[in-house]
Each structure stands twice: as C-alpha cells, then as structure tokens.
Image 1 (cartoon, rainbow, N blue to C red):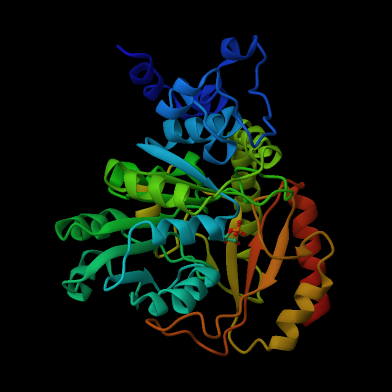
Image 2 (cartoon, rainbow, N blue to C red):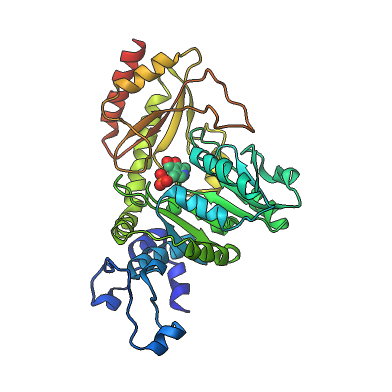
Length: 392
Ligand SMILES: Cc1ncc(COP(=O)(O)O)c(C=O)c1O
C-alpha cells in the first residue's frame, strides 16, 4: 500500500492533525516554515531553463502554500487544491476556471450575495449567460439545461435562508452533459462534508470562516476533481493569484483545531436553538441539523456534522423596528458580517435583490446568528434580555 493510500484511510481527526506536514523535511520542526519569498535561485542555467527544481518563483507556490494545499487535498479527496485571497476570490476563480464566452451557467438562487454580484456584474460582459435556479430543484435541474450549459453552481445550506440542496442529484444530472459542478461548502467545512466524493468538481471554502477560525485572516480554498484540476491550475497561474505566507500559516494553524472547535460550535448551537424554539417571539428556526428542518434528510445523508451558523424568523407580525431593537439589545453577539470565528455574531437578514428564482416574504423579519465558543447559558441570557427589551 502506498503512503497516500494509507493516508486516505485515516479518520478525519487524524488527517487534520497530520495532513500536509513533513517534519523530517524541515529538520524535525513540527510545522513547515513560513516562507517569505519572491525570487528562487537555481544552481545553474541548465536547471533554470529546464525547470528542473521544485520551486521556480514564489508566486507559483512555496513550502508554506504546499503544506496547506496538500493538507486540504488529502482531507477533501481532491486531485489538487489552490488557495485564494478570500472566499469570494475562490468563488470567482473557480467559476472563471470552467466557463468561457458563449457558455451558460446555472447558479442556486440562495448563493452567497457577493457570488451573485460577481456573476451579474462580470459574466454577462464576457458573453456568459447567468441563470438562477430554485435550490430545491434536485435532478429536475435537467429541465434548465441548454446546449451551452457548462457549469452548475451549488451552495448548501443556502446563504441566509439555509435551504439544503440535493447536490449529488444535481451533480449526476450535470455530468450527463459534461458540465462542471461547483459547491460553496463553507458552512459544513471540509470536515463535515467532502463534496468531491458525491460528484462536485470544484469544492470551495471561504477559509476565512472555520478553517482560520479566529476572525483574523481572509482566505479562500478551491479543491478540484480530476476533471476540473487542469483548468483551475492554469487559470490560477495565469491570474498570478497568491496568498501571503503569514495568512497561509494561520490557515494551517486553524486547520489543526477545526474538529474540536466545530464540535463545540455544534453543541452550543443545539443548546441555543433548543431554548430559542420555545420563545414566543419566534417563528421558524433555520438549521438543517434540526430534525424539524425541511432539509434535515439531505443534511443527514450528505454531511457528518453541523456548524454554528443558523437563523430564525420572528413570528409573523413582528415589525422591522422590533427585529432591529432585538439586535441592538444584544451585548455578547457582535453585529458584524462573516462568521466561523470563536465569537458569536448576529445580522438582520435582508434579501432585497438577493433572490430571483424563488419567492420571499418581504414582511418576514429574520436574523442570522453565528453561535460562538462562549458558554451557551450566557448567550441565552443575552438573547432573553434582548427579547425583553425589544418586545417587553
Ligand atoms: C457562504 C459564504 N461563502 C463565501 C463567503 C466569502 O468569504 P470571504 O468573506 O472570505 O470572501 C462568505 C462570507 O461571508 C460566505 O458566507
């Protein structure tokens, strides 16, 4: 058995601790060096003109980037991985790596807002047709295929509204027409979902969230199947994409503790939601790991865990003033974008201009929460106080 065969049989927690490390290659140091570099020297012109050494120029990679890419390659079961300087940059690079002028791309209506903005702003100008689809479409995605459809973008659960998608069914249909399947898999992280195993070609992470895990770095990652790897590698090189070594190092550091952090995020979220669902001001809770969630069966089938990002709707009749007063009264939940760090966060859900293939109730007041690593009892007290202030 080759060493990569034996590595791929390791359990996820063991992979997180060992993948991408080569202590004996670096004088025994547990972690790889943080290589600050541009120029790489060659021993002689023969080596230079034949490209006969591992590293040629730091933009094309160095031992630090190799370590994070190698670790994710193993964990995601990918043919190759590329890093990007934010999650959104990873999404844009992944899309551009698999579409060309004249093509048609299908994008889930529930994709992250800035994904939509990128698609709407840049793709039509490149003569690439963009069409949004209902995330619950499943295998019926076939009905939207055109002769020029070359890519299908998925995200599960959907941004802000948390709909699960039947990504394996969508992937199977897309592969019948040889289209490339992309998935924004940030919510589950590569620990709780490995999309390449069920047919995704480009598995995208906003590493800014759980991989980094400490709200201090922007990072994106793209893991590619055999089919998608060449296109991604070529585009990434041609665009001169590069992530600074200190940021890569913080991504690597975060990866090592991903499992223990997610376990706690998941536990705290369960406790917080168990309390929330009994509150009279609440309508629907949005979290596919809950048995009552409409996407629960898909979550159970495709994911092995859940993170700390969830949402809830206030009961109907709640005004925007009441919803905003609730948010303003929170003291432990910060009002801020992003998520995946150690701290709890809250934002109002604003869907204006964010959905075109599905209907949203314009009067519904909803909140997205990120449940952090604080003691959930304190978070519950904070929310209880905020409900009292807003509704009391
Ligand atoms: C689902 C999802 N994908 C991608 C991104 C983009 O990541 P970044 O902020 O690193 O660009 C975000 C950011 O909030 C997100 O929520």
